[in-house]
Amino acid sequence: MDVSELFTAPPPKSDPTKNPVVADLGAINGDSGKRNRPSDDLNQSSTNPDIKRPKIASKGKQRAEDSFEYSQTWNAEEDEEGGRFFGDGLTSEQKEIIDILNQDMEDENDAPHEASAGAEKIKLTEIKKNCLNLERAINKNREQRTKYADQPEKFVDSEFELSEGIVNLSVLTQCPAQSYPELNRLGTLGSLVGLLSHENVDIAIAVVELLQEFTDDDVLENQEDGEESSGLPAAEAVTATVRSLIDLQLLEMLTSTLVDRLNEDEEAERSGVFHCLGLIENLISLEPSLSASFVQKTPLLNYLINRIRPSKATSSSQTEDMELLKFQNKQYASEILAILLQKDEENRKKLIDLGGMDTLLEVLAVYRKRDPNDADEIEFMENVFDSLCSVLLVPDHKVIFLEGEGVELMIILMKRKNLAKYRALKVLDHALSGDEGSANCEKFVECLGLKTLFSFFMGKKNSKKTTATHDDDEHMLGIIVSLFFNLESDSQLRLRLLTKFVEENYEKVDRLVEIREGFRERVQHFVANSPYLENEMDETEIYLMQLDAGLFALQLTDVVIGWLCMEDDGVRDHLKMLLKRSDQHYGTITDELQVYADSMGNGPRKEGIEHLIRYLGSL
Image 1: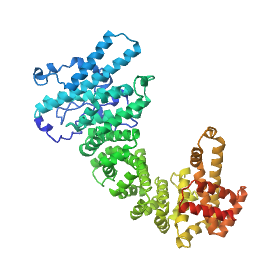
Image 2: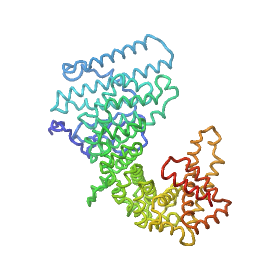
Image 3: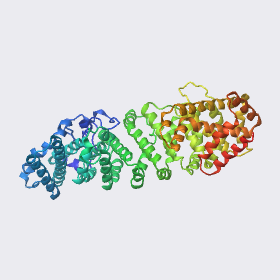
Image 4: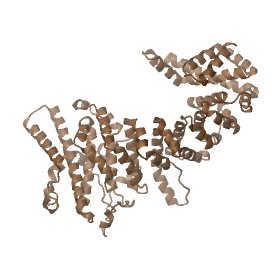
C-alpha cells in the first residue's frame, strides 16, 4: 500500500477496527481519576499491518519507572544516516540541560551525603532525564517528519518514541512538589502544550491524558509522608503548574483539540473526548475562575450545548449502538455544563445568548414518557435539571423560560409521576420566585398546576417509587409562598389558591401544621444534639447550619400560615385551634418570622413579611 498518502494534512481518522492504542497513563499509577475509561479495550494492541497512522503504545509501569535508562541507550549519532542529518539532536537549551544533569551526577559521585538526601537527588536527576528524553523525542520526530514527509514508514519509530516519552512523565505525579516546578523550569510544560497540535491526534490525546493525571485530585491525596519537605507544598506546586499551563494557552489548545480534531465515531478519539472533559473538570476544580475563562476565550460552552442535544431518531441498530457508546461523553458534557453554569453568572447569560434555554427544555422533554434507562442517564438528567435551575437564578431568564413553555413542561413532568417529577418541582420553585416570577405564577395556576402541587403536598402515594425529601418539602413550600406573594389580591387565580386550603374541611391546613411540627422538632433536635454548636462558632455559621437542618422550611411554613390567617377567617380560627393542641400560638409564629425578616435584605419581600408579623401580632 502507498502509506505516504496516509500522512498528509489533515491527518486521517483512525479505523475503529484497527484501534490505534492510546498511551495508557493509568497503567503507571493505576486509575488516576474517578471515572472509568469509555472502553476497556483501548489498550489492546493490534497486529493488523494496514494501519491508518502510527500506533501509540504504552509500555506500562516498569518501562515508565526505568525511563531514565533510555538516555543511556539511545544515541542520535547511531541513528539513521550515521547522524549526518540529526547531529546530536539537541538545541542549545537542551545542551544546557545535559550540562546540569552531568553536574548533578558528578555531585552524586564526588560528595557523599545522607541516604535521604541521596534519594531526593536521584529523583531530581530522573526528572531532568525524563524531560530531556521527551525533548529529544520531539526534535527527532519533527526532523524525521520534515525530512521524510512522503515516507511515513521512516518516522513511525520516532512516533513511538515520542509517545513513550510522554507516558514516562507520568511517574512525576509521585512527587509533584519536587517535579512540577522542574517541568516548568525546563520548558517541558510548553512542549507538552505544543504537542496538542501534533499532526498525529493520538499524540495529542496522550498529552491530554498526561495533563489530566498531573492535575487529578489523587496526586495530592497519594503523597508520601515527608515529600512536601523537599520543595513547594504539593498543592501549591499543582496550582502553580496549572497557572503556567494557562499562560501557555492550554485552554485554547485543549478546547480546539476537543472541538475540531476528535471524532467520536472512532474508539480512540472517543476516549480522547472523555479525557479532554476530565482535564477541563480538573482545571476548574483547582482554579474555579477558569470557569469564566473557558467561556470567554473558547467555544467550549457552545460545544457542550450541542453535545447534550437529543440524538435524532434512527432505525439503524448500528447507529443506536454507536450512540450508546458515545453516551458516557454526553453525560460528562452535561456535568461540565452544570459546573460552568453553577459558578458564573456571565456563563448563564452566555448560554441564553446561544439559545441554550430551548436546548435544556428539549432535553428534559424526553422524560415526559419514560424514566432514564440507567444510573448514567439518571445523572445526565439531573445535571440538565441543575443547569436549568442555575440559569433561572438570573431574574430576566424567567421570562425566557415562560416563553419556551417551561412551566407547562414542568407540570407535565410532575403529573407523569416519573423520576423527573421532584426535579421539576425544584425548577418551578426557582422559576416562580421573586417579582420576576409573577408571570410564571399566573401561568402555573392557569395550567392547573395547583392540583398536581397539592397532590405532592398531601403526600399521596403512587405506583412509582418516590418519597418526598426534606429538600422537596422546601420546594413545595417555596412555590406556595411565591404564589401568595405574586398572585394579585382578589384575583380569580388567588381565590383558586385559597380554595385549596379551605376545601375538604381544611385538610390541607391540617397537613401544613403537621409539616411545621415536623420541621420544628428537627430544628430543636439539631440545636440540642449538634456538637458543632458547642465550639466557638460565628453566629452566622450557626444560623446557616440551622437553616440546613430545617429552619428554612419552618420559616416558609410560617409565611404560608401568616398569609392564610390574613386571607380567611375560617382558616385563621382553625389554625389557632391546631396550634393550641401543641402548646403553640401566633406569638410563636411571629418570633420565627422576625428571625426570617432580619436575615433578608431590604425589598418588597421583606416588607411583606413585616406586614404579616404586624398582623399576627395584633391577633
